[in-house]
Each structure stands twice: as C-alpha cells, then as structure tokens.
Amino acid sequence: MKVLVSDTLAESGIEKLRAIPDLEVEVNTSLTHEELCQAIKEYDALVIRSATKVTREVLENADRLKVVARAGIGLDNVDIDAATKRGIVVMNTPEGNVITTAEHTIAMLMALSRNIPQATQSMKAGKWEKKKFRGKEVFNKTLGIIGIGRIGRVVADRAKGLKMNVIAFDPYIGPEAINKLGVEAVTFDELLARADYITVHTPMTQETRDLINKDAFQKMKRGVFVLNCARGGIVNEQDLYQAIEEGIVAGAALDVFVEEPPKDNPLLALDKVISTPHLGASTDEAQENVALAVADQVIDYLLHGTIRNAVNAPAIDGEVLATLWPYLQLAEKLGSLVQQITPGAPEEISVEYVGEVCSAKDLKPLTISVLKGILTPMLGDQVNFVNAPVHAKERGIRVTESTREEAEDFTNLISIYMKTSKDENLVAGTLFGKKDVRLVRINDFRLEAALEGHLVLIYNIDTPGTIGAIGTCLGRHDINISMMDVGQVLERGQNIILLRTDTPVTDNVIQEVLALENVNIVQKLEL
Ligand SMILES: NC(=O)c1ccc[n+]([C@@H]2O[C@H](COP(=O)([O-])OP(=O)(O)OC[C@H]3O[C@@H](n4cnc5c(N)ncnc54)[C@H](O)[C@@H]3O)[C@@H](O)[C@H]2O)c1
Ligand SMILES: O=C(O)[C@H](O)COP(=O)(O)O
Image (cartoon, rainbow, N blue to C red; front, side, top):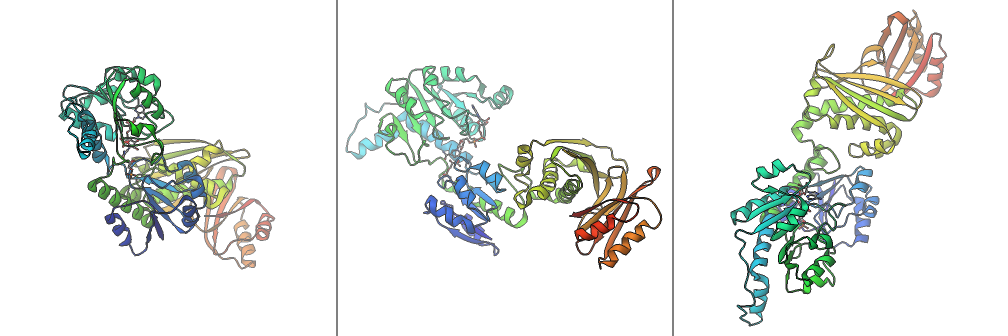
C-alpha cells in the first residue's frame, strides 16, 4: 500500500511508516493542487498538516484512497463530506499539540502585554525606545476564553498560574463543568464586557466564523487585547482592523489568518498587531507527538482496519474492535440477508440487540454494519463503514436501535426488522461459541444456518418428498448442496429451506425449483 505525506512531518513519523514493509512511503511537500489531483490516484493514504488542501476535486481523483490522516487538529483544509461520500476515513491527532498551542497562546499574551516583538525590532534597528514600549501586567487581569475545550482549558490553567482571573464562554459545556476547572462560566456578552484579554479556542464552524465581529468589538472594554491562535476568521479581520483604529483594541496577537500565507493583509502592518506564521503547534515536542500518532493511526487502519480519531467514523480501538468484530460480521451478514429477501426501497430499519452483545460500550458500529450490509447489495462497493449512515440518511431510511439485556433462547441475539416500499421481514442471528455467525430466525421460522456462501432460500408446503425433489433438481444440474437447514411453522404446515451450494445457482435452475410441486418462493442469496 502507498502512503503520500504531502506536508512537513517530523522524521520520526516518516521512519515509523517506512519501517512497515507493506507500506511504500512517498514524501512530497511541494505538490501543487493540480499535481496532487493527479498524484493522489495511486495512494491508499494521504498524510497532511494544514497546508495541503484536500478538496472535493482531490478526493474525486482518489480512486484508491482509504484514509486522510491529519498530523494535528484542525481539519478545515479537508472536505470531510466529500471524503465521507467516497468512504474515505478522515482522522486527526487531537491530543498531540494541545499543550504546545496553549503555551503559544500564553507566549503571545505575554509578548503582547510587554511589546516584546516590537521592542526587539526597534533594537535591531539600533534604537533604545524604553518609553515607547511600556507594557501592562497580566497579574489580576481578566482573561476571557471563548471555547474551553482541550486547548482552552490548558490556557486557563496556565493563566491561573499567572494569577489572572479566568472567565470562559462555551455553549456546549455546562457551567458546572466550566466552574469545576476553577474558571467562571459567563455568557458571551458578559465575557466581552469584562475581559481585559480575549482569546478564542473554538473550531471554525458556521457559528464561529466571524464570531468576534463589529458588534462584539462594540461590547468590549476599551483597551482590550485580542488573541487568535485557533483559526483565521473566527475574529473578523476587517472588523479587528477597525476596532484597533478606533482604539477599542489595544493590541492583537494573531497566529492564524483567513488566507495563509496572508497576502497584503493590512493588519500585519499595524504596530499594535503581533503575529506568527501559524506556529501554534510548531514545537519539537508537538511535532514529534503528532507525527508518531498519525503514523500509528495510519498503520493501524491500513493494516488492521482499526479506526482511531476518525471524524467521519465511530472510533473503535483495537481491543474493542476485537470484541466487536464477530458481532460486526453478524450484523453485516444479517443486514445483507434482510435486504436480499426484501424487495423494494428500504423505509424503516429497526435493530434490536439482546443479551451479551448489549455489554458492548457502543452499539453504533454494529448498527452501521447492519446499514452497510443492507446498502451494499443496493449500492455496491461504494458503501462502507464510514458512509453507510450518510447513504441511509440520504434515502430517508428511518433507523432505530434498541437493547434488551435478558436473553431467552440465545445468550446474544441481533434482530433486524426491515420495512420497504414493497414488503417487510425480520431476521435474527447469533454467535455460536465466540465467532461462529448463525442465522436463527427468518420471520416466524426458526432455523440454525451458517451465513456465508451461495445460498438458496425456499418457502414450501411441508409435504413428504419436496426436499428430495429439490435435491434431485439441483443434482441434475450438477449443483452440490453443502449445507441444508429447515425451519418449520408446524401449525401452518409451512417450511423454509436454506441451502448452501458449492457453486452459484443459475436463474433457470431457480425457475425449475420454483416449478416443483409445493414450492412457493425461491430466492438466490449471496453472503
Ligand atoms: N494555531 C495552531 O497551530 C493550532 C493548533 C492546534 C489547534 N488549533 C485550533 O484550536 C482550536 C481549538 O482546538 P481544541 O483542540 O481545543 O478543540 P476542542 O474541540 O477540544 O475545543 C473547542 C471548544 O470550542 C467550543 N465551541 C464550539 N463552538 C463554540 C462557540 N460558538 N462558542 C464558544 N465555544 C464554542 C466547543 O464546545 C469546545 O469545547 C481549533 O480551531 C483548532 O483548529 C490551532
Ligand atoms: O490544527 C492544528 O493542529 C494546528 O493548526 C496546527 O497546524 P499545522 O500542523 O499546520 O502546524
């Protein structure tokens, strides 16, 4: 398998990837977008940081690509929807540069307060401007943190060490949880009104784009300092310029920009603005962390199918995957079976988990496996574990999941009910031992059949000689039956027969079986 590293990655990560004999690793950090669109066709994995733009166009050319792996956090340079549609896992390494970025924020905060970059520049020019660069203490000042996630809370911790009063606004974290960090939870407007320093640590979303805009600046204290070490555009650049000109903002520290590298950005010319070229994560330690983490994640996914830190697939670690693995197979096989026996467009899918299987921490991967099983016969290879829920949603399929811990006949059971525009069916299966996948129910029929290979499902009236006639018919066509299982509903005198054959059964043989006396329905299945 081939891995392309298209942004600068610490050598340790590249070595780790190269140490895997099954991986061929190419490093090329100078590809243009057009070149990447061409080159990507050959690769199974793409490793990036923030410079490579993984656009829809790149992904449309990525015929073999299985994973886009970001050494770092922000994924706004990746079209995640387009990747998901194509079944490409997008993963990042969310932990490795948190401390480094928080430290950079603190460094910017101190540099801003004491005019360190400007004073350095002035001295390099041979000047001694002591008066000009008088600064401010941060002691006892109020720091307002917008977005108190991984980085925000490390910033809070370090700022408390500087004896600042820390307040924070984060609508997705309850006030109690924020207060527990020793940080006062406040509303957005309160933060704007009270803070001497405002720092943003949110992701770039529709909601956070231009979050700090003209209106917000109007609500701030005069003389406030503003920092953005998160993403360019969370603080609106034109409005910031204006606020500095109007004297509302005494200084700004920017590590990130709407356009990177910035072209003719007037903010950079202002004395009151200090800036770094997206250096938040650029320390030896952080780069080592993210490079090693991304290499591990790519290896785990390409070689073992273990998905970690994926933003478009539920995360399953190796251990959980090992436990869930047989259930994932069972879920997918049952999904495939119910789809193949139920004609029409799926409208409703209800999955019930019974018994031991319920002890799995997260059943979502199993339900996704069911969807993958159902959709693959309809949509082919384009469906996978990543995009199955998206396809189901697009088709307006209602999917529900329920659990029942007390098992009856089986220690574990997965049941799927599917209603389509034409029919409805219920199938259920279990694991025998630790990993043998078995079908145990189709509607009211109980049976016990392995779920694999070329299968023929026959509904017939329970009369002597019918099974013999079916066997003879297949024998005439040189089709060997390797397994047969019969389910009965005695009171109705009805049978279902599930046959596994060594070779696929052709349509004309199916018609012949259907023509036999007492045979009502014959369906070919592939599992
Ligand atoms: N400058 C750099 O080099 C650098 C390095 C790493 C991360 N980053 C950026 O830092 C930012 C934060 O990263 P993180 O790992 O802490 O993310 P995180 O997901 O751990 O935390 C983000 C927090 O923002 C909150 N949030 C979301 N929308 C909000 C809103 N409208 N108002 C207030 N809070 C909101 C979330 O609830 C969450 O708690 C991201 O934008 C990331 O891309 C930059
Ligand atoms: O989101 C991140 O991890 C940071 O913005 C770092 O980006 P970089 O890897 O390009 O330095």
